[in-house]
Length: 244
Image (cartoon, rainbow, N blue to C red):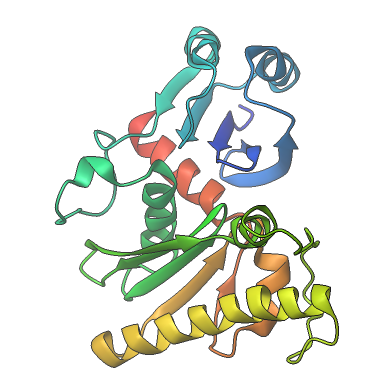
C-alpha cells in the first residue's frame, strides 16, 4: 500500500504556502499565488491527497475549506484542535494557528527540552514551550517587510528598499542605513530576546523558521536550529492526531 498523501496549507498575511507529504516525508513545498479555490483545485487533482490541514491567519476564501472537505479528510487548525501540548495562558483561543503549528513541531522534535520557536513572517513571533509541553507565551513584533514598508510609507523621502543579508554595520548611504537599522536591528532584537529568556529559564533550544530566515539566520550570534519548513512539519504532526 502506497503512503498516503497529506497536503498542509499555511495561509499567512504575506505568503500562502503548501507542502505535500507522502507518508511522513515532506516531498515538496511551494508558494501559492493566492488563497482561491481555483488555485487549490488543481493541487487536489494533481496529488490526490487523502488528508489535508489548513493553518490560516487571514480571512481566506471560504470555498477552500469546502473544497478540501469534499475531496479529503480535512482539518482546520484552531484552538479546538487536539495538540501535543497545553496552553495555560489567558485566552488560549486567541493563539494564532501558525503559533500552534510551530509549537507542535518543537514538541515533536525536541520533546524533553525547553524550546523557543521564533517565526519570521509578516510579524516576528516568539513562542516558548517548556519541557513539560506547556506553551507559556512569548511576544510579537513587526516583521522585516513591515518595518521596511513603514519607513517608506510614514516618511516623505525614505525609499522602499529590498531586504538583504549582506548588511554593513554602518550604512554609507540612505539605503544601507535603512538596511542596517532594520536587518541588523532585528538580529539584535532576536539575540536580546534569547539572552533574556536564557537568564530566566536557563538552557533551551532556539528554533528559527519563516520566510525571512534567509536574511537573518547568519546574523544571529546565538546557536540556533534553522528550519524553513518547521511549520509544515508541525501541521503534519497535528494532522496525524486530528485526521487519523
